[in-house]
Length: 184
Image 1: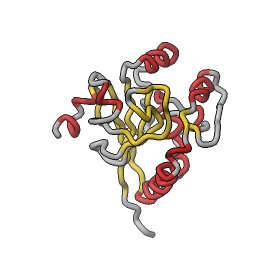
Image 2 (image 1 turned 90 degrees about the horizontal axis):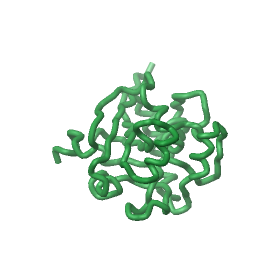
Image 3 (image 1 turned 135 degrees about the horizontal axis):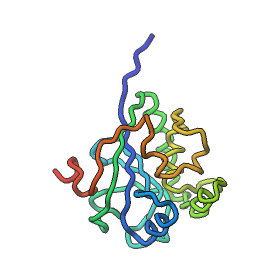
């Protein structure tokens, strides 16, 4: 039987302190209300659904996030928690294949704001080519054969990632002080 090498991916949960984040936090009471997925510990290859332009919170969609120059650079006091998820090489290949579809069609994707309200009502609101951050991360995992929850990606919240037994805590604190980022 062929041995499958394990790899790690990283789930980043953040709180930028923006008005939108504070609004969501009022309802959820969760410390982090944004989720991203990264393929490296240094967070250089990180994706989510969020602001396409750091200066415009109303223009959202599929984004490659950059800690140093993107939205996070405008919010230096962003707090975060980073989790490591051990996966197989094959699961990473599947995720990268799904990711290439998102990248190729990035202009067609919208932020699923109604879906955020659907979570609050425990009623999935899904549109083709429309996601919110944690829905996207859960969708990436599910399409790769990784099911962390017994619910639709459209009902997964950033807080669902916290404390999941398959996720190992790597760091919690200010994003700007995360060692691989702060050290560069």
